[in-house]
Image 1 (cartoon, one colour):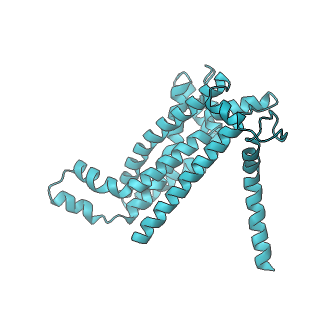
Image 2 (tube, rainbow, N blue to C red):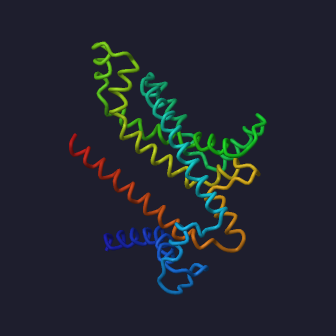
Image 3 (cartoon, one colour):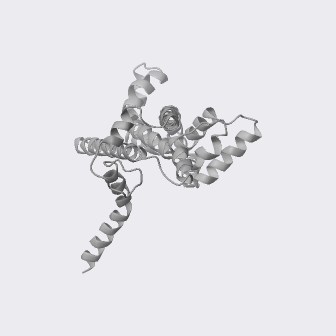
Length: 263
């Protein structure tokens, strides 16, 4: 009976989590403008999504979202990887303090981070727009990259770096040819995580986007919902994003499982 109840609770929890996504995916294959109104199977929304039939503002929001996410993920991956290497080489007590400091932005509510960055930009007189959104996304994505890279550093044999130096390599050559190949899987995972977090973010973006007309996908959906409805093309777009992220997660997990078996 306990096993049945435990499994029933697990399936109920999964149903609550994934049923809204499943509903969006199902109704992405009908051209009804109102979600929940099935008017027959159709690829019209997908055709409109790829043929340029969407609203111009939605296209701009999608372009801005992925551009910001790509820049933020690339920069935060570089910064987070360097920071992880630096933290790893600190003394144990200092390392513990830095790890705790790195975890604070992760545990901190997004709205607090957004308000803090908003006040920071205002206090320095920085005009809010594309640049401030990118900087804000880099700020909250970098700690996640550090967390992704740190386990790879702990698993690495520290003697191989010293051996490279003893064999005549410069510190930069040892970093490029020894450390980076070892932490590359963590960097890739951190990049994908940062990219996904940047696309998903709303709270930080809404406080740092300014009033110059810049929109991301999250702010567009928020504004669209306040008007009393959602653009129908958002359903196939959400489906594509979900499937893409799901495929990436499966690939990453399969790679990690394969590497674990090889080790």
